Length: 177
Image (cartoon, rainbow, N blue to C red):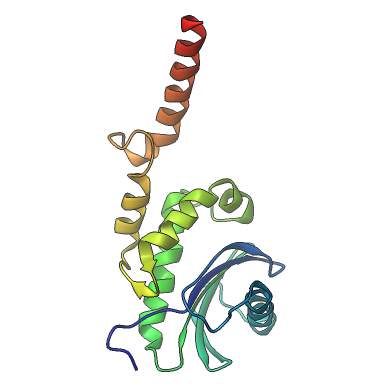
């Protein structure tokens, strides 16, 4: 067992088991087809459970998988069989809560696909190379929000600021022609 707790992957799948956003940190699945087979198998094993309110835990292929479902999205975090389940559940809850903040409470497949860049930044802010960097959802969401065009604006106004900046840029270009 390593001294530093780690995760093997973070998965965000839709209600049919298809990928929305995934990130692997382990060589346990060397090919893309092996990764897709793992995702399908985990989805098939967990889809009939009721993981809507609390995080659920399952053993699967010598791995601990923690998961939670919200509307048509399925959130998963996988760790080795020696990892602490509470630690993995904390990582999963931090991931879910950060996505909930970033999508402004509208956590569904359509919003996730429209904001895929934010979700991928969120995953990168939580784990790097399998080592967990952050678990606090507010901190994760703040870091992701700071990557936007106008980092001085409050988070709730960033999309408006981005739209105005784009319009200003287009107007400037058309006036300079």
